[in-house]
Image (cartoon, rainbow, N blue to C red; front, side, top):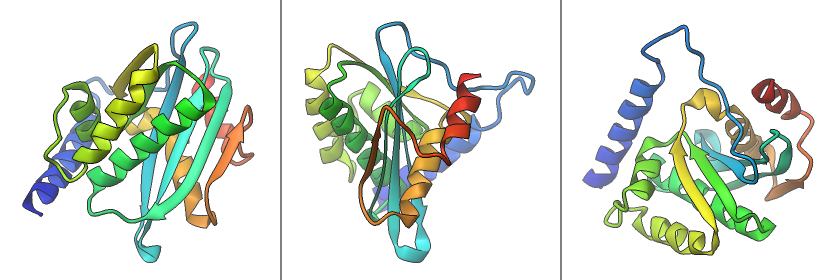
Length: 189
């Protein structure tokens, strides 16, 4: 329990540190992936009133075009880091199901991205989830994990929040929900 509390504190502290850039004149926004690869953003949202969580995933190609999106509710796990790890695992599963093999995964949870890029975290409450992710990515030709500020993850965040009103898993292929479209267009332009 102490480990979970520490992980949540560090996640919140690191995310707050990353929310104010050193140079306020430089606005950070979503960047397209390299030619021939895809970028997949993921996020989670917690709904205290219903004791549940929403996961959101947005897949785009090098032109910023939507390849797929996912929104789904799940029961509330023990910690924020657990939620973000579950969101990441579902994202990797979704991408594998679609058949993409050259992917950069972006999320705004520094704790989870650091754990995946440095091969740590196996003793954390979400350690088994990280191991699942590491096994899943073995089937990819090229994979990367990148921490991004919340401003670069707005579409995935909106999809995660959309899960609060969903009955179950919602998937869109080569399409996106109408209420999400303006956020995608803002990212690309």
